[in-house]
Length: 185
Image (cartoon, rainbow, N blue to C red):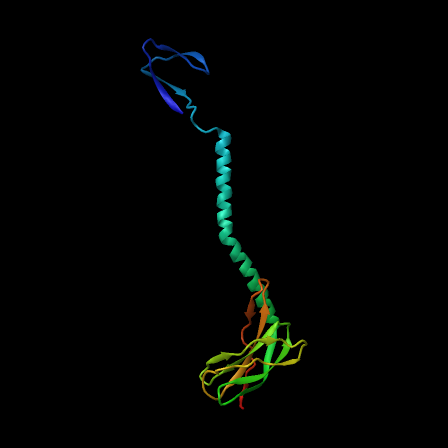
């Protein structure tokens, strides 16, 4: 909108426009009359543009939030499975060329794989190759080889369950609290 200042010389002014033919009378110095600029946007177009901007903002925010929600769902699923799974090493041996082997027993849960972890005397951990989990509870499986064992003797062994997430990736659970000593081979 813009305002037109009309000088009031005779206390009355007649203003003719497309919208009205009216005479404006006022005592005083100046009369303000509003005229409309036809170059502006209509209310409908302005409303549509505001809605489109709001939708664009929602899409941008969702693109940042969505991956976080999906990843947290997978993490919760894996953590729940890890809490229900228990594996423990039953046999462990390390030979003079720093190669280890052993067996792992499934106590509870249904992990896809298990792995043996050999721990050196100063706490250095060397994970073994994951192998398929035993098919039944209390079943045992020969653990994958553990090459280039770190640390020095005496060695200990722990085990870890591995689950496959809904995204197809492997997720290792924390180590089992069951730790056994390894024998020299």
